[in-house]
Amino acid sequence: MSKTEFDIVIVGGGPGGYVAAIRGAQLGLSVAVVEAAQLGGICLNWGCIPTKALLRSSEINHLLHHLGEFGFAADNIRFDLDKVVKRSRKVAGQLSSGVAHLLKKNKVTVFDGFAKLAGKDGARRKVDVSKDGKSVATLTAPHVILATGARARVLPGLEPDGKLIWSYREAMVPTELPKRLMVIGSGAIGVEFASFYRNMGAEVTLVEVLDRILPVEDEEISALAHKAFLKQGMTILTGAKIGAIRKNGDSVTVPVEAGGKSQEITVDRVISAVGIVGNVENIGLEGTAIEVDRTHIKVDPYCRTGEAGVYAIGDIAGPPWLAHKASHEGVLCVEAIAGHTVHPIDPTNIPGCTYCRPQIASVGLTEARAKEAGHKIRVGRFPFIGNGKAIAAGEPEGMVKTIFDASTGELLGAHMIGAEVTEMIQGYVIARTSELTEAELKETVFPHPTISETMHEAVLAAYDGALHI
Image (cartoon, rainbow, N blue to C red; front, side, top):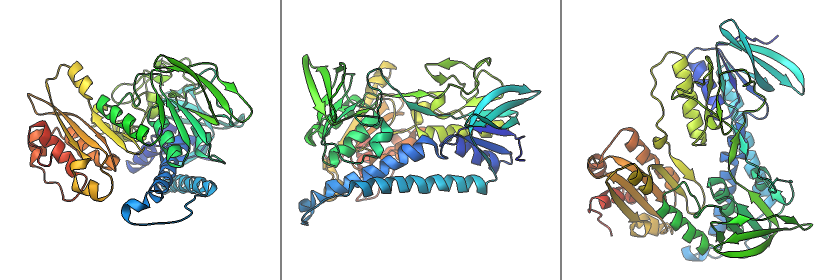
């Protein structure tokens, strides 16, 4: 019979749960993970990783159709959608297996099933595990970490049906490329799918209820993304209202009101990307002191819930809904349990990345938020067109924007759009975490020729010292 007593039981094996388990084992704690589906969670199996594999394929497709710009020519360029999808699934499968290997290597016990808080046994908490309606085990531990993640929000009339209206799952495994596609929701998920399908040749209409796409990003960056997507041939409708959708055999007609104009748009498929809700149901929260606010568990800066001995990390613990936030919270939570001194996460130091074309990345306050917070600011901007490496690489579209406190020199925020900015944003994250000011950033030597030089120039520009514009 498997061991049932542990130091920590973790409910959920996604990027928060499995990382917390590994760190707990490294600290000498006995750890169990309960996972009902696939190790790695939505992120690894149906989110972050497989979507990046798809986006890489779409980038290649885009480049193949622009070979002339680089002095090449090729005939009869085509793709095999089935192979594109299979490669994405293979990548996800490989990494999920890798997670299983890491947990085994670190002697973490994994239970296959659904977990539910089941009260206390003295100082220990009880967790019931079941599979297909049958009891698997009752685990006990003084500490339980809830890492059950989130799922796609479903709006009335936009329920995914697996054929005409897609969630992210159907959107990642298409059997054929829709000629006409509507994406409802222009956050990171919606924009990435819009970018993938547009690069693969679909006609894409992007619909957003708010007055601009990518609404959490700096307004200037949103405007540049909007302009870039229009140039690529997307149709974008903002401030939009959706009417009752009509299904017509193998197509969908969507009434849309936007910009004072009402129209009916017929497409082959609709992707609903209107946010997420936390998986708080059926995990035993009833009768506990755990508070839930809009499907997310309320926690303190150390991931503690209102119930002693129960913690929550990742998407279930609220925004920002990012895998790297979940992983960091998992480490922080376990180290605190182990008695280590830890520092709570500053949400403004968590970078956000959107892997569309062009890429978008940001950290800290937007210009509007900085002003709302009462800061007198200095803003620096530097365009990719002024960067030698960007021009040589054929990627002149983009900009880096920095926002500093005018009196202290604190870097309040950094916002980027362009090639490989998701790889570059970490430089600004380190600067904010280390509390660097404009003085240290101006004195930092950036290698030449690299696109990262735009980061330096954007700092210099905030202090009237940009060199190449």
